[in-house]
Image 1 (cartoon, helix red, strand yellow):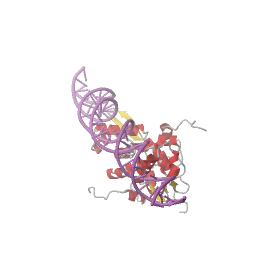
Image 2: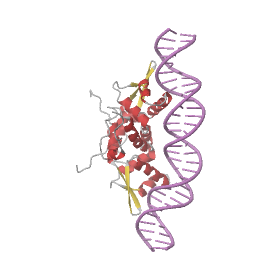
Image 3: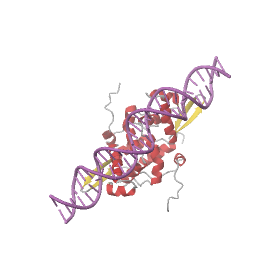
Length: 125
Length: 125
DNA sequence: AATCTGTCTCGACGTTCTTCGAATCAGAGA
DNA sequence: TCTCTGATTCGAAGAACGTCGAGACAGATT
């Protein structure tokens, strides 16, 4: 059995297809790590982590770029760049409506990452 | 109330002190994002994600560097460098016993990251 | 003490990332 | 159609990153 598997994709992750067991239970295959690492990397910048949090916790389920940008001491292009990174990582989706662009979180991949990090409580407790 | 809080530390996270609500429920403060982002960043490289998975899933709860290195097509110094990154992110601990060095996962911070990413199922389901 | 093995540190190299200002694109309204 | 505003793309500068080989360090064995 060589590397014949069609290789997990971002779409799979967001479709909710379970990618693998928690890392505390089983080793991640190299191909899976290659697909998942970019998502963690996208969350690995303080600005993007805050953006992700603002988007994921938006009361309406979505939030306008015009509401995100003023929260940072950064230029518009920089925020736009970070949003693109989150988009390419499959963590958020964007939709343009008229002049404004709205972002919303992709819960599927967030759940995947959370379950990957899940740690069971010690057996004897 | 200005920024008077003593600023969350890695030690707090590994002590299990809850840092904050899931990002889908509430915005992360900037200071918190600054503390958490490095942990995600550490997991944002395929090699480190695999290392973390090998360490966290080690049957004995720990694993020797000599068992980690051969799993990669990378030099010893490179693996050592990645392990240092995981250590500095608070994700793993190392202990030397004789000639060998053993790594084990820090479950506290892993739980924090997992709960941060947690997404509740939609209300109506 | 000399040596051997496993691991880490150091310095260097090329690549990638973060950030910016300038320019561009997409709609809305005059 | 012209212009205005919101958002993105482009190109550039500096910092950070991943990788390596050479060398240093820590214990164990002789």
